[in-house]
Figure: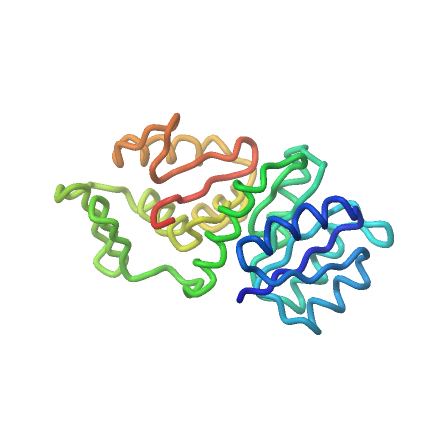
Length: 227
């Protein structure tokens, strides 16, 4: 049974989450403050943490940074703060996903399942991705789609394999720009948009109904394959 820690000061939210999570056979640990949440992250050894940013005793962004010093598992931010800057800040600080209140429990459960599946994988780029349609051989630097070899530039290949290494998770624009182009290009978001558009065209991926590359507007991108 996977153990999930909820850090949220709203009793009704904790109750709503507890009902939904226990119905799916998760063990739920609750904390109403940052202090209690940080302690439970150590004492209860959860597999995943759901963190609210609006805590009474400490800003949630600070709590996130402290959690990342003691907890290596997935962290989902749950917050009424919907601004892009808040999302980017949290994801850059180590959050794996960001869900805005109000939210649907089924969507949240799907995100939790994806993160827990991914937790069993390593955080390095896999030697190959293969869903039967798209095959990415990272060692051979070879990509095929339905048996056809795709010609990708070095940057396109680097971006694709980087996103695959975080599959199921949002990767921020800043992180992608830093790792693919370097720190001097963190403000050059147009580079990223152009490369994503090229990859989508080559992968025959519809941005309106993506199979592989999903956009989180103003925040970053997520590789969906394998979920």
